[in-house]
Length: 118
Image (cartoon, rainbow, N blue to C red; front, side, top):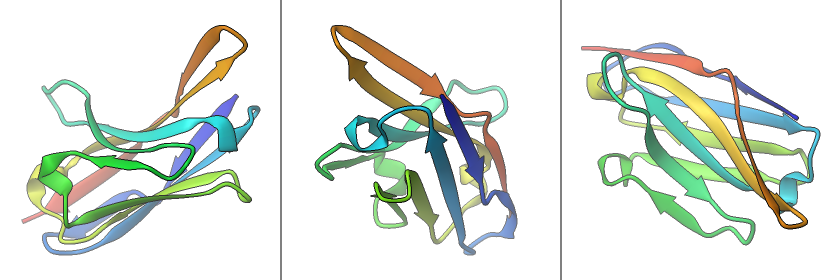
């Protein structure tokens, strides 16, 4: 299983970035996919989750600014981030969770750095 994030970088406050998570090694369409982030000195927190049927849950702090989506044909998940704020600065991680028989499998990507300057 591989989850490879891309699209992070340095952006000014108010700017936009689009993160991608390319998945391989499992049936992507059967996985619940999420974005997490971890800022320096803080715990990792869930940012957004998209289910297999397209249901979506977003952290209150990013509602109206971030959009999560998935393309099952491309085995890829996205996070469109608009109106970025310095508080959004963190390492962003892709997370996959899926059932294989009676066992639940969980995988993390390596993370991509997002830095928002004021």
